[in-house]
Amino acid sequence: MTTSKSSLPVLLVTLGDPAGVGPEVTVRGVAEELSKGRVTPVVVGDARIVRRAADRWTPELTVNAIESPRDADAGSNIINVLDLANCDPEDFEFGEIAAYTGNAAYEYVVRAAELCLSGDADGIVTAPLNKKAMVMAGHEFDGHTGLLAHLCNVNTQYMILGSPKLRVIHLTTHLSLVDALKRVETDRIVKCTRAANEHAKQLGFANPRIAVCGVNPHSGDGGLFGVEEAEEIAPAIEILRAEGIDADGPVSPDSAYRVAYEGGYDIVVAMYHDQGHIPMKLVGFETGVNVTVGLPIIRTSVDHGTAFDIAWEGKADHTNMVAAIEYAYKLATGTGGE
Image 1 (cartoon, rainbow, N blue to C red):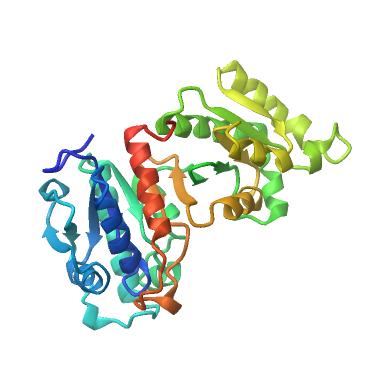
Image 2: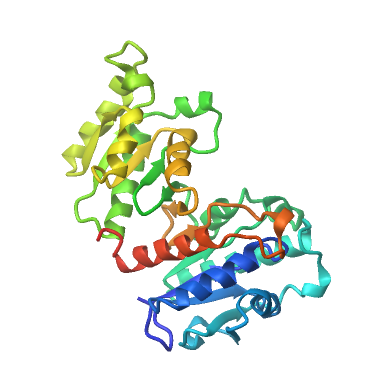
C-alpha cells in the first residue's frame, strides 16, 4: 500500500472538467472524507481552481500544492493538490464546453493513471469530464473508461455499479439491445463473471455469491420465451462452478435484484445496460458508484456528468463523490465485505 506522510492509503481525486461541477463536488467530498481520517485524498488538478472552489464552499480548508503524493501533508483541514498548473480560471467560462478545460481534465486523468501504475498511489476517484470537450481538445476517447483502458494497455474492461447494498457488473453496456443480445455468449459470460468474482474478493468477500441473470422473461421459462439461457448462460455457469466460483443461475432478473439487495448475493451479473442500471438507479441513485473492472489499478467514479447548467452555483450534490471515495477506500483496504 502506498503511503504519504500520513501513512494512510493515497487516493487520487481527479478534478474533472474545471468548467463543470467537478471542482465543487471534489472539495466538498474531500472535506467530508478528511474528517474520517481513513485515507489521504490528493486532488489532481490545478491549485488555482481548487483554491477558488475551496474559498467558496470549504473556506475552513487550506489548499496545499504538492509535486508528488508522497509530499501530501496530514491534517483534517488540508486539501493536498497535485498541481498541474494547466488551467487558469481567468481563461475560461464556468458552465461552458471548451477544448481548454477538456484538455485540462484529460491531463488530470493521465497523470493520475501514471502515478497509480508506478505504485505512487493506491487508486483513482474521478470527477466528471465532458467527452465533447475532451474530443474538441484532440483526445479521441469515449470518456474515462476508454482513456484509462488506453493508458493501462488493456482491451477488456467491465462496468460495475456499486452501492452499499447492491453491486452489478454488466456483460455489455453501450450497445443497442439487438447488438447486446448477440453478445450473450458462454465465453463472454465466463470472463465477465470471473471479473465479478475477483472484484468481490478485492472488496473483502471471501467466497462471493454471484447471481448470473437470464436475458429473457422468466429466464426463458424452459425455452418458451427464448433459448439463450439454455444454450449460452447455463453452460457458462457449469464452467464457473467447476472452477469453484459460486455462480447461481440463470436467475430471473425480476427476482435476482431483490435477493441481492437483501443480502442473498454479493454481486449480480447483468446481461445488458438497462438490466443493471434500472435497479441500481432505483435503490442507489445517490450512492451508486461507477467502477471500472479489468484495469491493473483501482478506479471509481461519480455516476453523474459535468452538469454545466448548475456549475459553480453551489447547487451540486457531493453525496456521490463521497460514495465514490468510500468505495475506492474499501477496494484499497479490502473492507467492503464487512
